[in-house]
View 1 (cartoon, helix red, strand yellow):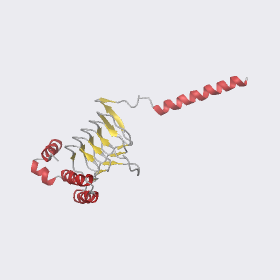
View 2 (cartoon, rainbow, N blue to C red):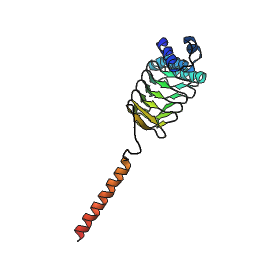
View 3 (cartoon, rainbow, N blue to C red):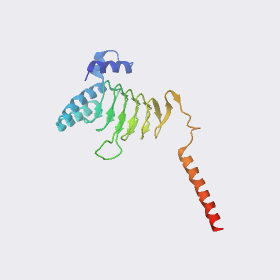
View 4 (cartoon, rainbow, N blue to C red):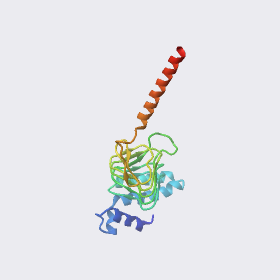
Length: 205
């Protein structure tokens, strides 16, 4: 699992980490990913029961649940991590950072792709829920306790319930003066009805 580079990623992301040995022995996020790598190997080599058994053992030991079918890139950091859940069809790119209580979950019982895909260098804040089979673009940031239900552009920041993009490519978005697409559609329909009424009145005359 390229353990050394993963430990170095923990030290870059956590100012409380004082040494490589401390990270290796005491960080449950690192342990959860180590167990996942082993479980994933068994799961993808037609030994699904063993893979699931290892993942459940890891959940009890670390408080983090990662399905062995998930696909995880390099240098994933799960900081603190307790309560984090990563679903079976979730995909995570390189250099991602997840905090405690994060859920990468689905919204239905479909057997096909139902969990999110995170690009590279994505940060998901504590308690955030990312639910559904959509993409979260590279370098995106999802704020704590957000609930994200649709695709997130690259280089953006999402906050709220439901989550909305408040920053894109370093620029803050002005949601107060941004046109409301629902309002615009209703105005269009209202104008259309008025036009049809006028046409009907003209034909009756």
